[in-house]
Image (cartoon, rainbow, N blue to C red; front, top):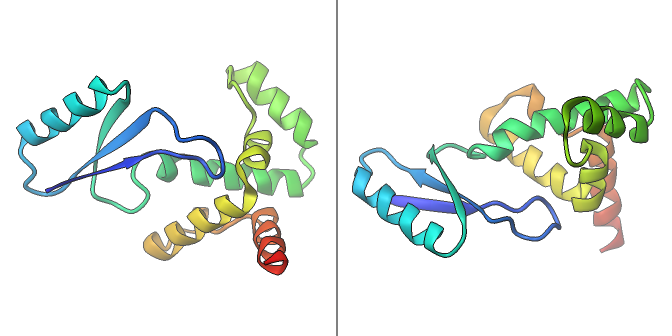
Length: 140
């Protein structure tokens, strides 16, 4: 068996990135064939094991939560934190502006799912994401 997940961050456009999900017993030729098909359609691929959150969300969601928590702790303003990461580390977009653009409520939903699946505190949604989700729910 083989699965795939095309990455999309919140409300942003779908990316050109697809995570090919290798399940136990998946033959190498099946992975190679999937990669060939996706790449023939202009998509970029990476292979991951069949785990909750795959690669991208498992790596970035704790980072986003940490940035939101540091913002709440008044480490710096959102603009200064974003600028520091853009200029200091070469990020094209800071974590706060990225989350505001793509949706804090969507970030909440993903982190809650990962927290329930993995039980790791780093996936507990940051307060700002919880507030955004509550406001979204209230508006409905």
